[in-house]
Length: 190
Image 1 (cartoon, rainbow, N blue to C red):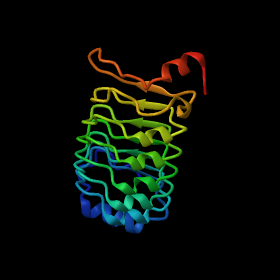
Image 2 (cartoon, rainbow, N blue to C red; image 1 turned 135 degrees about the horizontal axis):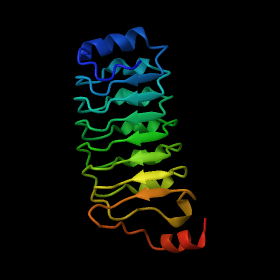
Image 3 (cartoon, rainbow, N blue to C red; image 1 turned 120 degrees about the vertical axis):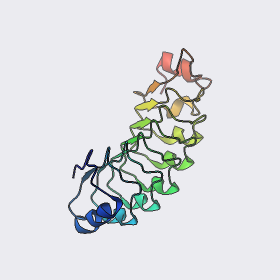
């Protein structure tokens, strides 16, 4: 269900959509709408795989987001969301998490529970430090921390995916890798 840039969609409409189409919706695109709040009824979208809420007026994700067990892509870029709910740990099928251009300043340790996460974008946020639990993301392939204050990566070399790509820095600043990681990357140590 693609409602992108539909300025007529209001919060109350979204509530009705969740209730009436709960078993059918796999994709919900709300980008550019005037939605301010995701309703608790979101939990009824049991088969939802892709949720795009970028460029909306949303300022928080409901706790019920954790009930979307089939969610693979969560894109909240360009919103006013300031934090991710702890229930994010329940999204075991999540492949892509994009929080770029939000006022988020901290990622909860629960992101380390997202065992199928391959792409994490925290670009252009207030994040200064990544939780050490990021090291538990064995399938992570792309970590985008450009234009953040992140200057160190918190994991051990043995936990890094062979194909991890880190996009980092701004205005020439670099990111310091933990001790042993550079050697491991050069020597191909798993």
